[in-house]
Image 1 (cartoon, rainbow, N blue to C red):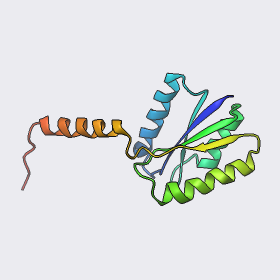
Image 2: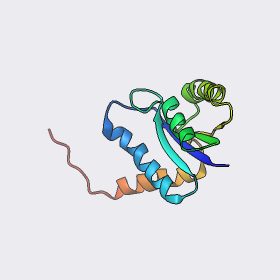
Image 3: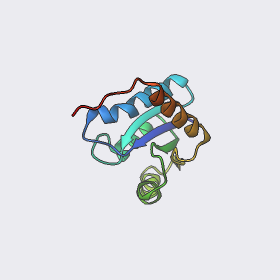
Length: 130
């Protein structure tokens, strides 16, 4: 079964903020673990989730993993993305849509936070300007 990964971020009006998701999609494509990798945004940017899902289906996906690029399972994940998963399943009857957990409490996230904190602590002190 051809499986697609649809990475979903909140979205921003600032293109450079959305570039992080595009970078992640590029890196995920390079792994070859998913036949299709696309990006989508909940709001403020394009493509929206329905358009991103449709792109996955158009490329032959019969299973689409909806992966929220969010730190926690707040209202957007629990309400909005769950409702979207249901809507997509009703629109594309022959495609399975699975909603993944947000990044949240994944153990590797702790390591990333430690790395970022150590990087910052090693930087030279920036003098405040008065």
